[in-house]
Amino acid sequence: MPEISLEVNGKQVSAEVSANMLLAEFLRQKLNLTGTHIGCDTSQCGACVVHMNGNSVKSCTVLAAQASGAKVTTIEGLSNGTDLHPVQAAFREAHGLQCGFCTPGMIMSAADLLAKNANPSEADIRSWLSGNYCRCTGYHNIVKAVESASAQMRGTSVAAE
Image (cartoon, rainbow, N blue to C red):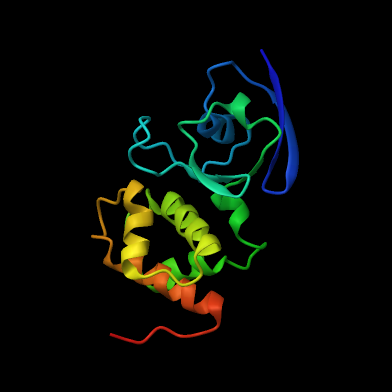
């Protein structure tokens, strides 16, 4: 079995993995980082989104061996200790979640969007999150959460509806 070494949430980790182990499985099984959810196993739902080398990826489509040498951030590594990332806080405040299954992937995707586009339009947000499925919320509050996080990160406010 090949040994991989990578940085996960700011810490160097090494482990032996089978050649066909997915990054999502590696994170959950080898590192016990269970915030990365596996929903569909076919790259359709987005529950498994993590950041790899600064870009959001569906970790069910990446072999663990392919991540060797990479910098990976999971939902557990997005916050700064007990201080939530602005996107995490906005999801909580705007009720951008219900059952919570899609939430880690939504938050990771939204954080990547805001890192690349500090002031996205509603259409930009909806397009960016189109690879993440939520069966509960209807997306309205998710979009509002991303808009709120964007405004907070820019130091402005969102007009109330």
